[in-house]
Length: 537
Image 1 (cartoon, rainbow, N blue to C red):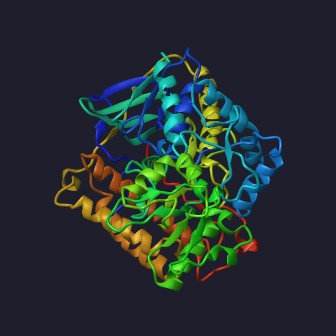
Image 2 (image 1 turned 30 degrees about the vertical axis):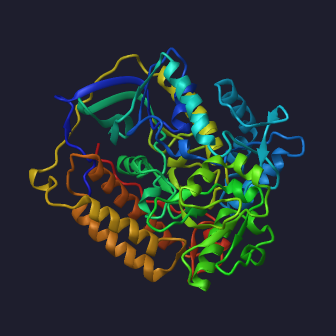
Image 3 (image 1 turned 90 degrees about the horizontal axis):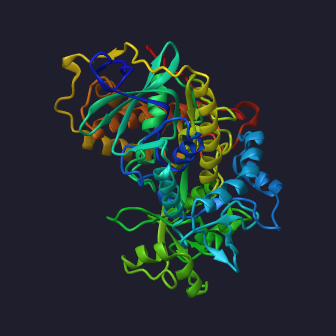
């Protein structure tokens, strides 16, 4: 049974309406940066489905990559990014982001971000895949929290920006092949049709599609799924990056152990105390994330142990506690002293490299729709994201989308019209008797088992069959709550990811197939484009 075009029933003749020059969906670093790039003579409505402070950006630990020291060069950062991306980066995009990164970091300082300093200058650290120390950080290991604090305060003070939190974006409104706004659900108002001259999608990633993940509960792929239903092109959906080091204590929530821990010299050891990365890659613990994650997976298989260990015992304990106060606090809650004890870790889903296709300015293939941040496939990351390149991507593309959407909005007449649109789901297809939590948990567990770090044809075909079965009886229904809508989005995302992984019959970057263990440049030095869904309105 086909999925309806819209998740929610509505009729523009009777609905509540809201109008804006520019609608921004998502309040992470890309969304806030986009809103702040729109001039004050245009109105901006920024919507986010949870608290404005709840985004992947806020949880970022490591920092922002930028060439800021005399020992480093733009060419070095570009080359590091291209190497990590395993042949699929767009060099022009990489060069643009790398060159604009220092200016965006300077803008964050102007907005009040308190980065860590060393001798009066920005303190720099190194992470996996980087040839130089170029990562700026804040509050030790709480960079995202600090920079989002400053950016949110700046956005709240901007008189032309209105922020709606606790507002779920169900779908993008389309008319005559253009994006004209969004269908949102807001407490107290119910379904609202937001009409905008231009829309910027910055709704983040989809890490919650996996049970083992570093992502907060909000990361359910709503923006990617909505763009797909609206007819926008997606690409590279097979490339989910797994972070190598997630705190693994049975029964507890997973907690990210920053890349910067290895950047400061921590070792990875197996259950027997052996430092296994020395045999895997000449860069050892500082190899890119895909290489380290796959090495950890093989080590766990070899030792038949559910995790490996981070060892910081050889490092200066004062430096460790000062540099990583958040990680130290969390580990102490489990009785672990990170200056002495080995910390149990294993990989977890971390960052969606693929997403909505955008050009160099942030335009999607759907007129009227722009996109920035993790929701996109911009060409920066290729087949594997270099550590700490995501926040700067959100800044550079957020700013570009804000400027571009503002220029496009100015050219449109200053008349707002609620267009005649409606969506009705038959009564018999309204939700009844479905255990949303159970299906969601089953999906997330399946993705770990069959669409995880190591894949093969047999497991991918099983995953496709299982997800296809769930899609047939879940996607045609209409829900009246966020968990139901999120499940529909997760199923949509999972199906697209599995289809892309089945299509790419090679191993590249974050996508490793044991039945095709080598890269195949002759056939696959290209993107996998997900077939665009035909939008009916």
